[in-house]
Length: 119
Image 1 (cartoon, rainbow, N blue to C red):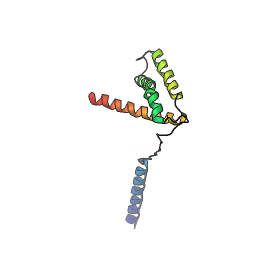
Image 2: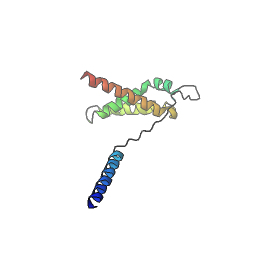
Image 3: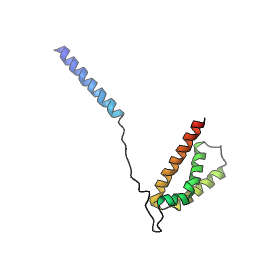
Image 4: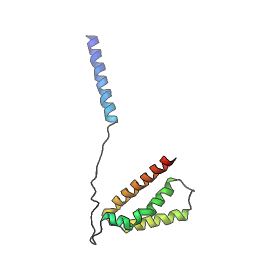
């Protein structure tokens, strides 16, 4: 009888361990559908606005400089890229800014992967 209760306790403990282990590694995936063809009153899509803003080139330059740490680039140059980045974002409709930043980050990740492959 004692053996049976010990086995039941071990089985319960094992079940709790597996449940805890499974919940500790559970991943939640959230998806967001973005309509890339949202148009502003002038009829420009987000994609067109992003092209007009040079794919947020100044934001890319600023992010690249920031990621490489302080002191590696001239602070005036960094501030100029930051201000130009803000200007580029302000030139886009609010509805397109997040999509623009998402596309910019994708492009930067692709460039970083390419640099890693070359090494």
